[in-house]
Structure formats: structure tokens, C-alpha cells
Image (cartoon, rainbow, N blue to C red; front, top):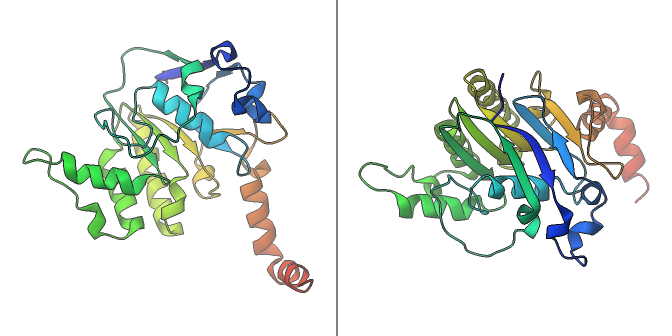
Length: 238
């Protein structure tokens, strides 16, 4: 299927020589990514740059740094990196009909603005009146549609395993309708989505890996299969 974004380029000459972004091993050698699937997962340990790149892609695609649709124009605190200034997205036509940047880190701010932006034609979902997980999933189910573009930053942070499965189903249905997703995640449930491309930021570079090679899968499998031995080893040394 055709992708809304099929190639990512980073021009490091647009960033200062002293930029901290040049100190992130997986990013500093990255100049181009060619995409092959409608769902691209970014995986890796904390601090490897996956959320930094996802954020830059979302901003370069026209989304508010703190999340929401392209119509969300607000800022509570400018904490995003300048990487988006160096990013160029190769886009196909037609353009996506809709889109959303969903991030766990600033979801509270987006939920607040959702109420502020509501009117008779666009009633509020009253997200603050629900649990964090319920509101997060409610937004995903309402905003994720066919023929649209999405950036999800660690969506599992607010979701139970059961609701992660519900989100996986929502993503799969949207993909069948022509949607494209970029997802930074640690969830072995979400990463199991069939036919997704997984890019790991470990080993100091961005490169493809199989589902079974992700640290999320390997650590989870190790814990489930060897829970008693592992806990005895970890806790017995205290």
C-alpha cells in the first residue's frame, strides 16, 4: 500500500555544532530512513532517542509539539528539541484525511485543551472525568480513522494489557483502511502487531530488528519463564 510518508531525511547542517542531539549515538549518524510498512515502531532503552525522533517527525508533519490534531495550537512549556528543523518528510499524494499526535507525557494538557476547544458542533469527551487509561483509550478510539496519519509516543503507559490489545485492534483496523502509524513503544503486546516494521535505536544506530529480538520481548519472556529464579537472584543480593 502507498504510504503518506515513505522517507525521512535529516540535514545536520541545520543544527548547531554544539547541539546535544549530536551526542545521541543512534541519531547522530542518521541522515535518512526509508519506510516499508504502514506501521513503524521505534524501540530501545530510555534515552536512545526514539521519542525525540518521533516528536520531530510529528512536528515536521504539522502537529502541535504537545499533541493533539493539527488544529491544536497551544503551548504550556516548550520542551521539544529543535530536531524537527532539520527533518524533511517525503510525502505521497493524496494527503491524509486526518491525524493525531498522541503522547503520554503531555496528555493532561491535551485533555484540558480538548475541553477548551469544544463547542456545540464538537462536544467535549470530558476526559478529566475519566481515569487516565480510560481517557487515553477514548481519544485513540475516537481519533484513529482510515486514511490518516498518526504519531503515538509510548501509548501503553496509560493502558492495561487488555486495553493495549484494544488499541492494537484499533490500529490494525485503521491500517486496513489506509492509515499510517509511527509508534515509540516498550510494549511487547503492541510490538506484536503483524507486518509492522520495527526499528531499534540500540547499539548506537537505528536499524531494523525482528519482534523476538526486541529487548521488550526478550526481558518479558525471560521474566515469565524464569520468574522465581530471576527474582531470587535480584532480590537475594539486597
